Picture 1 (cartoon, helix red, strand yellow):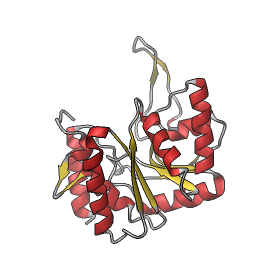
Picture 2 (picture 1 turned 30 degrees about the vertical axis):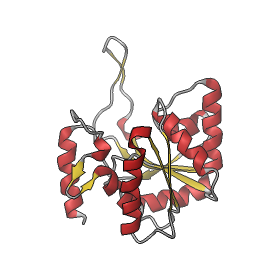
Picture 3 (picture 1 turned 120 degrees about the horizontal axis):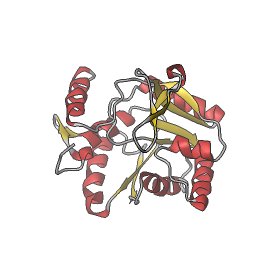
Picture 4 (picture 1 turned 90 degrees about the horizontal axis):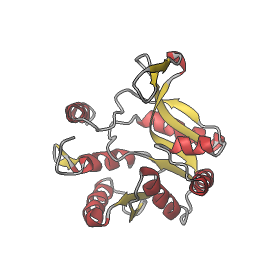
Length: 220
């Protein structure tokens, strides 16, 4: 993003990206616990942002907030949050990127229902472009059937015991994954896909900020 600030803390209108994401997450009626992995130097600031979102949503008596330590890799951060959540009465865990404020609520509710019955479900979208696999030299090695290629998004929803088992197996073997569905797959669990939205982008490049700002304006 070529930004001095962490991209989660960039402003869109009167709020940070993080605040927009939390505010939308609180619209999911079944959310009861909010656990945020964060570095020590930002923990107080992030907690203040999150608590203001909870207050604005009128959910101070419904949603618990907890900061937990960030880790070296994404999965280490999520793992810390997961083990904290395991100390609560939660049966499902919904893992979400803080820089995805444009996720479709209907798809999230569908994923929650599917994970509750099947164990694991994620939002994803069909690939629009032809996908190429390449080797270390940059030469194409194969072209997967595009009809079978889906792009993973978040939220990703799991029965909490299932995801803890997946994390423990990955920790024992040293396996590193870039998303939680990969960990569940690695542990041998089936993961189901719910059609998400191509608008559910992850803030990565400067033009993404313009799209997100326009999307938030159009969606209140």
